[in-house]
Image 1 (tube, rainbow, N blue to C red):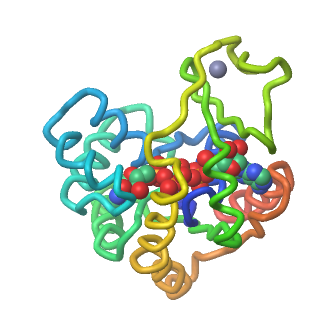
Image 2: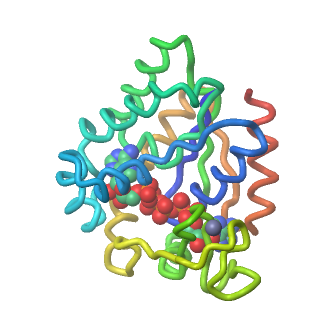
Length: 217
Ligand code: AP5
Ligand code: ZN
């Protein structure tokens, strides 16, 4: 099955994708994570992507599609994927359809995580993750039981993203509205769009998403 989580930066795509992986046995596939890995490995694609990501713009479709295609060719994604942060342009959505058609698959559900822009700046500026296992935390909304120690793996190396600052978040929101929000109408036209109130608490959003995905796959 193929499930797409659509939503602006900070909507909770990564948080929810990680939870849904376990519930449905699907693999989270985040183009943001794949791009950050390419940047830290210093690959050609990573070098080209870095400046754009730091400025909050969208990386070019050719780089993103090459990275995604590589990832989809790996054996662990056979059962299905939760796409987190992809597609982000109509060209990416068309390319995804073609890639899936070649594998006899299609998009089963696209879910829009609906939020207020103003709240996203706060969510993103307070965010940090565990360097050991990737578990996400937030200064106000989700702290580990013991400060600085990951609930999940006991790791103590917490990281913040280079693009998680107020100025870059503004640019990322603009890019979302200009280039990605039109995909809501695109998937509505396909009859596979649902939306959830992603201003609700993390557990409630998860319950809503589970219901939608159960019905769709
Ligand atoms: P990417 O890594 O995809 O970042 P993003 O879309 O900006 O999304 P985020 O990861 O910031 O937010 P999220 O929705 O996952 O929220 P989270 O769950 O962490 O992309 C980064 C960059 O890479 C882009 O700017 C672009 O340059 C490039 N890129 C990536 N994909 C691309 C593509 N396809 N094409 C072109 N370029 C691409 O939650 C945020 C915080 O809020 C957390 O602290 C969390 O704990 C908290 N939180 C979550 N849900 C709730 C809730 N319900 N209530 C309260 N707090 C909550
Ligand atoms: Zn951890």
